Image (tube, rainbow, N blue to C red; front, side, top):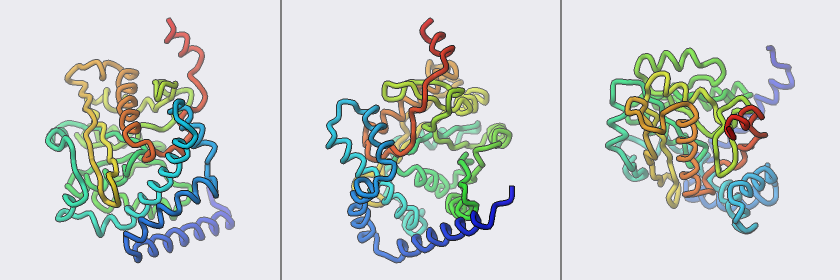
Length: 310
C-alpha cells in the first residue's frame, strides 16, 4: 500500500531525528551518557509518564507484595536500563570486538553453549525483552555463529532498514515476523540457528501458560519450531552487572526433544518450561525487563479453561 505524503514526511522526520540522536550519543563520552541516562530516567518515569499506567499494572500483577515505592523505583530503573541499552547499541561496534569482549562479558555455561551451537543439527535460541537481548545476538555474530532472528518490522521503513543494518552488522540475519514460517523451516532443515523472543502476547489463540502466577499466551510457533525439527531449545539471558558494557551472558537451560525430558513432552510443556525460565531471569533483575508491554492480555478461551479444569 502506498504511504501518504504526510506519513512519508513523518517517517523521514523521525528517521533524521533518530540518526542525529545516535550521532550525538556516539560523539559523547560514555561516562557522560551513563550519567545522563540515570538523570533522565526519573523524568521519563514520573514526569512524562510514558505508559506509566501499563507499567504500574504489570508490576502490580507480577509483584503484588511490593510497596508503591518498590514499584516506582523499578519503573525508574527500567527507563534507565532502556536508555543505557540505546547507548550500548550506538557504541557497540566500537567497543565489543574479538579482542575486547572479555573486558565486558562474562559467559556462564560457555562449554555447553558452544557444544550445542557447533552440533550438526538445528537449534533454537530463545530470550525475552530482558537485559540487552540485542547485545546477545550481536555477540553470537561476533563469534562467527550465523543466527536467523525473527523480528517484527518497524512501521517506519527507514528506521526499519537502519535497525536491521545494525542487527546484521556481525552476521545476524533478520527474518520478518510476518510470513517467515517457510524461511524458518528452511533454516532448521539446513541445521541452522533460529533466534526468537518468547515473551510476546499471542492473543487468545496462543498457547496459554502461567507467567508470574497469571495466565499469559505465547506463540505456538516457538514450541512447534523446536519440536517438529527435534531442535534443542537454548534459553539465554544478558544481565547488566553495574555499568555500561558490563554483562553476564547465561545459558539458563536447554530442552532437547531427543533426550525425551518432560520439558519437551509436548507443546504446552515446552512453552511452560521456557516461560518459567524467563520468569526466573526477570526476578533476578526486574528493572531490566520491558514492563511497557501489555503481557497479560485478556484470558484463555472458555474451552481451554474447561479442558484444563477437566
